[in-house]
Image (cartoon, rainbow, N blue to C red; front, side, top):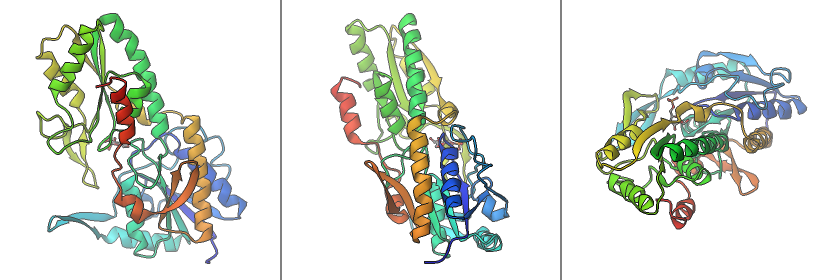
Length: 364
Ligand code: F6P
């Protein structure tokens, strides 16, 4: 097994609470073995441009509960996405050569990449060029395969639950139909967990048949049923990636597409409110878009622990020579899951059992 002297670490994609807890654990575990850690700035941009800083015990002191990432993040992609005969292929660009040269120049023996499927996908593709990488799953969307939970999901859930608790009182007081748009590009994890924990009356997710994941009629039906039962308010939680049958697709906020080919989503909540207004319900629709609030703030105790465990294991996998894997939570155990296997399951759909539980207690 090659001796590890220096580990590089980077944080890419949308940030989430708990990343800094993982960085702290990586530096502490590596230091205990006499291994140096260098942090690359702003995701894959760091190793491309050779932008790195030493990460010492002093640098990670006091960051356990601080949101965001002290390294910064970006959605930089060293590969180019191409469609070939209906299949997506990732072509290397000169940025891959730059990464290889900079890792060599900085004597980085192994790399830990913290991020979602895009960031981890790059780590996996770089394995073909000899880069020894370990991935740590991090995204509030919780849509990464190979792990029960990704860092950040639990904290986002806490934010959504808190918001729903607050929205309940005003919905009740004003007899309103409150529509709460939450994140979740392809998967309804935040919507279902948040909606259940916060007592939503309707939960709408992106998953579902190709023609759409919900219709306005279905939402109206639940609201009218509740009205007939004397419930003079309703709260609808809708994931940003939900697909109204009437629209035939997702509601897009702008034509902006990132380096991984994702279009900027947002607006389905306002669209739904507009449609429900036309139905002459005796409740006034109002919209709350939780947006980036879900990614911000301090991590919950669960995320701090998960991130600490993932950080420790990521260093240990590297010490054992296990690369091209991610740290995956399986029940209570953290395992080394091949990145190939985990990425093949992305985007991981929401657990249908949770949706069943929601329907079983009358949530539409
Ligand atoms: O972090 C994941 C995510 O929150 C998605 O749910 C959302 O679509 C996306 O990031 C938006 O991120 P940005 O606007 O930073 O590209």
